View 1 (cartoon, rainbow, N blue to C red):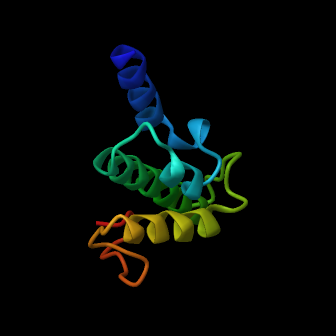
View 2: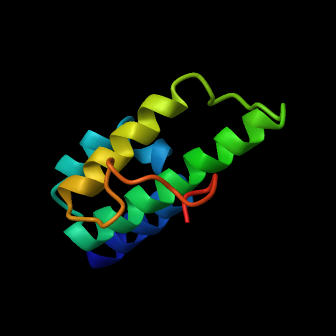
Length: 97
């Protein structure tokens, strides 16, 4: 069981959006700890920002329709987990550092 859980976390880190359709679904997941959810949400945020940067450079891919809304939802969920970079704060550069 622990191995399956570890594999699920690693799979999610590879592409969070394959396992969860929206950030609130991840937040409601009962298997992951708050720290793991925070890591997954930050990875999702990083991925979404990368897609935004690519779109600005006319390198769009298949998943660009609702990125801005997903990014907002990710940041709200991070705020609910007590992350310093909640929805009220802005990033210092395009990829969120």
